[in-house]
Image (cartoon, rainbow, N blue to C red; front, side, top):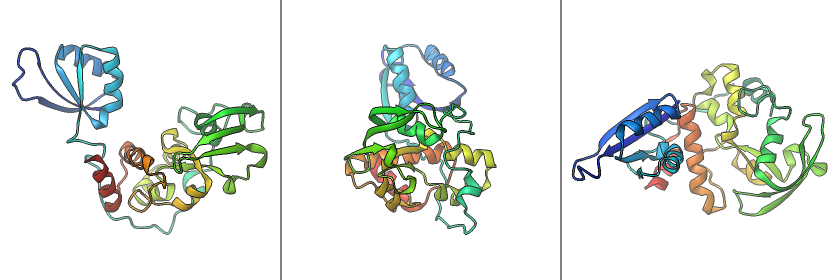
Length: 258
């Protein structure tokens, strides 16, 4: 389902009329196209929440004018409440074997574990090697690290997992998710969350370790240029999975959107 919020008016024949606000869920991009066909040569205004979909449609329907609605954002409707650390969190028990390919995400069951898939997506200047877990596993590459702004080399022959200079970060940490609603999910839902490519980034190992299980209200990347993209990504995952967010993190994200 694609959540679309829009405002439109007929800019050509009724430029002074206030826009009509529409905030609904469309079952497919085809449904969104049906909306645009019905609207015709109208001025269509999508909220930030639907910005990526609006951009794609704007490119294919060039006669439309597109704007972002600054009065709406991805955290609309998200529950804001203090985080209470649950003592029953257990990474293996609650979110499954790390990086398992037995998940229902786009990379699931593709012959490589999730970590190998993220490394292949996020690194450049890559070479490959056949391993028992992946026929085309990354052997070497360079990470343009978003958290530090530095280039970090990756070499599988010197990779030691938890101490690797390149690690995979859950943007919304698993323990944070557990405390903010994931404890009520099914086992498969939690496994899928732990391996969702949208929530994963290859990053500096030391920065991944420094972040621990914190949200943007407690930790932001030292590379200030990535603070806003990071916060937007965090907010998007919170909204996608209908998790709650702590007040400090909400305030940080709100402040960046102003």
